[in-house]
Length: 575
Image (cartoon, rainbow, N blue to C red; front, side):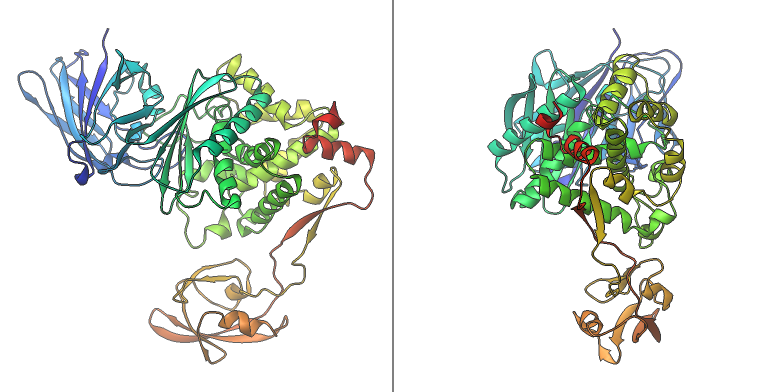
């Protein structure tokens, strides 16, 4: 049987460069074309991985073969129909869960960023890792090949690209959860407590499996790398890669952020990796894969991550309600909510979400945050209109079984809406038009009212103390909120604030001057703009920001009590 074989060398980790030998069988024809993906599934940005390939050559047993680069990420090899080997080097020194890394402490391989493939040819892949002399451990979901841990096997390129590989001297822990063997590896030092983390992982896993009533993989791997500055995660079919600040596993508040991150990525086992929008599989690795449904794929997962932490007993009820408040406030305080819908945010993720600039808040929304708030609203809508018979869990379980278990295909927006409708028992066409594909205000008061909760804005009629501007520590404006006093007064991003009302600028000056100000009064800002000194008059105004808190209504109906109990997962009250 024909197979593609890769040998990966890392002999000089201080150069941060891998050397890869790709062995190809004779595939017929005088030429073949190989390509490197431009993105990795789960992270919707064209990352141009080919820019990290430094050298590439090919040869067969007798000759060096002609190589022609035909596109930014593709090469044509003149094979004359023979078997050949392609030898290339990959620079790897970008810390994240989406990019490769190599130094003298560890090696991280994101396969889409390293391994070439042949379009339209689906062959199994043999992978042989040749570790640096100081490395003794390897972790990946790929199965061993011929009983050698340094050799791995993938049925095809899709499986290979969905299996990150960690190499070095990481710590390894094994545990069972939901009847499935799990492996947890930690690369790097930090103030973490592995035993506590594993116990909390088990609670998260059991909680998520109860939602879907099915675990989709035979084993699961979690790779955690610790960092000075970064946090994030990337989901895979049978594993996940996490990165978290090494000294942020304490105190409790930041530790729970990590647990929520794990809950988020683990939930992707079902939502995204299997229950997925139609555009997200099979993948086109050389171009954007457009979908309007990331508000479901990521937004619903963002709603569930903290809800699962609560259900697992790691948040108190009041702590969870504070998380709900925080999510609402973050969503409602984004001026971009008037400009971009969550469907548009999903579609434009490729050019906007991962490329934030000083104006992004004014014209974009997060399909994570706003999508999560919308998921919360849909959950309450379903509970209320079904008389607390159903909730969003039932939607996710039905969609998972219908589209993955029964059909193994992706869904369209209309198909997912139909399942939501079937459990809510109401027509959701207007909701979709207004809040998914439109930018009308979310019905927060009405829908949270179904659970007997009222939103109170504690900033109502409060003076906008920052004028809607953000400055760095050199008093240079880095962003300006749309319709703020700063924008109306003619301040620009990149202005350097030199003085306010004749006082030389210093930390705290703006806040000090604002303490006695009222709406309608003015301040004189002296700024340096492109080297010229200018003065701008800022008129103090009330803030348009909100800071909602949730409070129970004075009188609760029986229906409101049932809805709240179902949402808060008070199982005994719903039995």
